[in-house]
Amino acid sequence: MLKTLRSVVALRKFDWNARRRRLATCGNIDDLRRLAKRALPGGVFDYFDGAAETEWSLANNTQAFENVHLEPRVLVDVSTIDTTTTVMGQRLPYPFAFSPTGFTRIATSAGELDVAQVAARHGVPYTLSTLGTRSIEEVAAVSNGPLWYQLYVWKDRGLSRELVQRAKAAGYKAIMVTVDTAVFGRRERDVRRGFTLPPKIGLETFVDGIRHPRWTLDFLTHEPITFSAVSGRGDVDGSTAITLSDYVNSQFDASLSWRDLEWVRSESGLPIMLKGIQTVADAKQAVGEGVDCIALSNHGGRQYDGSPAPIELLPAVMDAVGGNIEVLVDGGVRRGADVVKACALGARAVMFGRPYLYGLGAAGQLGVEWVIDYFTSGVKRTMALVGARNLAELGGRATISSTGSKSSARPS
Ligand SMILES: Cc1cc2nc3c(=O)[nH]c(=O)nc-3n(C[C@H](O)[C@H](O)[C@H](O)COP(=O)(O)O)c2cc1C
Image (tube, rainbow, N blue to C red; front, side, top):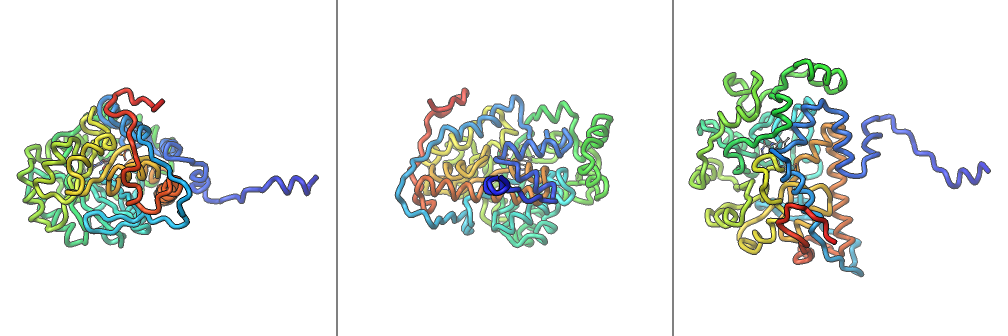
C-alpha cells in the first residue's frame, strides 16, 4: 500500500519563503491582485487599483481584449520562438515595457528601485514617472537596462528643462510625454478615503496600519516619501501632505499644446513618445508633427472615463498611420495573450502598470519577477499555440468581434 501511495502522491517540497509560497498559488494577475489587496493598507491598494469616476474605462480596457481573436495555425515548427521587437530604435527582448507609475514607494520603501532592478535583469524597459519617489539618478544607478523618462510638463518650464536634461545625462533613452493629463481625473476611491501623498495618518489609516504590520514597519523605518524629481524644494516636493489632484492641477501646465513638443525634443535630443493618444485624429497629428512613437492609452482609465479601450482603437489607428509611426498599446493588458493580440493588430509593443504594482505590493521584487515570468511565458506559449515563430508572422492574424460597445459583450 505504501508503494502504491508513493507512486501516486508526490509531496511538494516545503518552501520556507512565505512570499514565494504565496506567489506559487497565483494563476494569473487577478490572483496577484488579491494577494496585493491583502498585503497593502486599503488606501494604498485603492490608489493603485482605482480609476476615474465610474471606472468604466478601467473595466473596458481589459474586457476589450476578450473581443480580439487570433487565428491559430498548426503544423508550424515552433520549437524556437523569437519575441524580439524594436521600439524607438532600441531592440527589446519582449514586446512589452513597464508604464510609468507615480509614488511607487508607497508599495515598498525601495519603490521604483525594486521595479527598475527587476526590469533591467530581463532587458524590459522601465519608465520612471515625473511623479516618481526615487530620483532619475537613483534609478539609473541600479539599472543597466533600458530606461525611459515620463514627463509631465510643469508650469515652471525651467524645471521641465532640468528634468529632461538630467534624464539624458543619466542615460535614459527616450522621453515619454503624457498628454492625457491636462487636468487630473477624479478618482473617487481616493476622494472617499481623503488619500494624500504622503499618506496622512488618521484613525482609519492607523487601524489599517496595524492590520498590515509588514508594510507599516517598512514605511515607518525608512526616509519619508517625497516627489524625488523636485526633492529639497519644500514648496513642491510633497513634504507636506497634499492630494494628488491639487498637486497636479497646481503644478502642471494645462496650456500644453502641440506647439510645445518641438521644445521638448530640442531640449532632450532624445526620441519622443506621446502617451495618452485616444483618437485617430490625434494619431495622425502626431505623425504630422514628426513624433517618433505614440502610445494609445487612457491612463489605465484614470483620466477621462469613457475613453475607448486602446486595443479597440488600434485597428483604426493602424489603418490611418500604420507604417508612418510606431504605435504602442497601454491599458488592460493582463495576459501574454493580450500582448500577442496587440502585436497581431500592428502594435510594436504594449505597456502595463498595475500588474507590476500588484506584484510589488504582494511580494516586493519577487512579485515583479513573477509578473515578468508570467508575461514572457504567456507570450511564448500563445505564439506557439497560434503557430507564429516571430512577431512579424502575427501580422493580419487577429480580428475584433465587436468594437465600440459599452456593453463589453463576450463574443457568442
Ligand atoms: C498607480 C498608478 C500611477 C500612475 N502614474 C502615472 C504617472 O505618473 N504618469 C503617467 O504617465 N501614467 C501614470 N499611470 C498610468 C500608467 O502609466 C498606465 O497608463 C496604466 O497603468 C496602464 O493601465 P494598466 O494599469 O491597466 O496596465 C499610473 C497608473 C497607475 C495604476
